[in-house]
Image 1 (cartoon, helix red, strand yellow):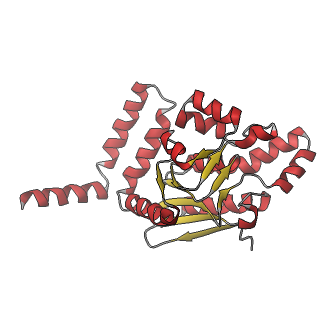
Image 2 (tube, rainbow, N blue to C red):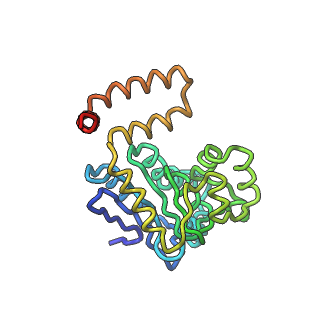
Image 3 (cartoon, rainbow, N blue to C red):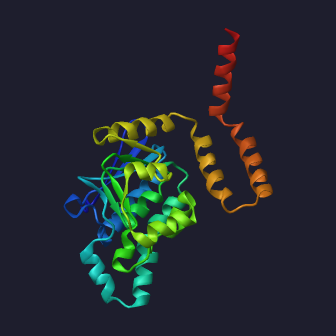
Length: 258
């Protein structure tokens, strides 16, 4: 059994996906990527799962690609490298893009290169105070091959994103929060509790509305205003018919009558 990725789901519907190669700072190799894709797909399809949390074991979130695997990568020809990225790394990106469920990155330690990009692919990011981020590709004469150049500019803008890509400088947690990369920074010992609190709070809300909100926000980046308004008017009309909405309205009316 490949235990480089672990999946555990609690009674609140929060599934925690843990990168589990602490001796390698959770740097990923091909077996880990395959297991990651498998478990992420399971969590996305499992009706008992409402929220997905991604974190790392030990003192790192993810150091990016494993050095030994990267040496193999360098020996391949260009087409083999491209196919590797498309068939393996990019499967995680596409799975997350299709996921209606909220995904939270619990950044417990350093995240470098593709490790930072994996956090950017999540919807929300909570960082431990000692955690750090860096788009470190430039230090090896590389560029992001996963989706960092797609996600980072959407979070911080093109000028700040280019600065981070071109310099490879390390961001501490508080700067990441100021830039809008981290939603929240908490003391190291409080990360697990803070992530659980947020995840369980979201899990307790009406799930159809949660998922429609996620679709509407991301789809808005690629739609003109008129098309977006047409879409959300349809979404609004649909969620009004959900049992969750009806129960909440009934409860509100009962409280008002007292």
